[in-house]
Image (cartoon, rainbow, N blue to C red; front, side):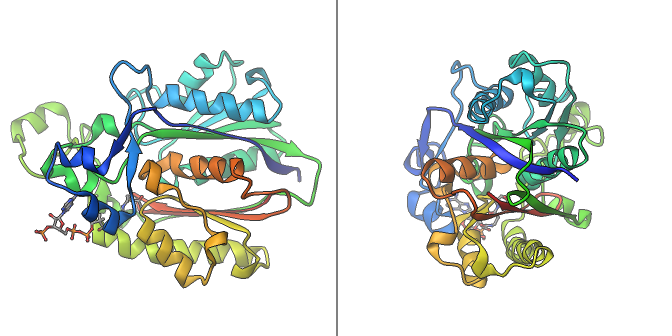
Length: 335
Ligand code: ACO
């Protein structure tokens, strides 16, 4: 079986910084509440006219990742694009990347696993490389949350948490048996699908029905989150799936050089760090600056950690995520 390795990482966030104080001017919230509950200080939002969209940001992050891999878009054999906020209902974002980067007519696949989307996408790339079907796969996570949040006091429990941005990696075939993606671990539990969801417009709840219902609370076209329920499940599943990944490869938590958790909430990351007895140097967080960027959060954090020199050749890197579905996942990588 071939070995797959991440050979390039990239990220892009819009220039427009939105602080907690900025939000407190448009809804009843405040910096202390947001920081105490989530750790978030600011996030980025796309601004009308700045040219960004989910796919545009994904393309910008991809260009950087491809260049760092020493490749051109022409070398890529497949695109796997994870997002819950595509530019269009259909077609998906993958084909937009294919067009924007002027790539060959390669397969373009969209993954809809929300916060776990990037690891699901990475696992697909890993399998295509390991089976010899592809040499270079582009994996993207990108989200435009600000375009679809309820930015009023009614939506404050959700809207203060999320931000916009994109991250991308290139996964390539490698001849070095000692480094690469060692394993990925994916899970789902659909019975909790309604605890964190955006219900419509969908084929189950289409525009005329929504208009006829004219809901004032729990607006179906804004995300709904049962925050405390999600929190309780997240801390359990994150820990489980990290341990599962370590055990599958014969490692202990003390072997981890860098854990990159999906940036859901700083309190969730700190809870896991404490539970697994990891030091500050073993965990990377940047939710303080970007908020929760769902499928983009892991590749953004991975890129920033790499750029800061916190991930080096030979390091044991663990990625882990939990989110809507519920779905959760981990990846164990020898960098
Ligand atoms: N500003 C000020 N007050 C607020 C805000 C806000 N932005 N949002 C809610 N409140 C109020 C509520 O109205 C409520 O007021 P009340 O007591 O008068 O009724 C009070 O604050 C407490 O609300 P809760 O929802 O109970 O607040 P909680 O302490 O649970 O914190 C939070 C909410 C931060 C969402 C928390 O439940 C949480 O972190 N959940 C985890 C979910 C998560 O991180 N999701 C990220 C996305 S999913 C993922 O990526 C895994």
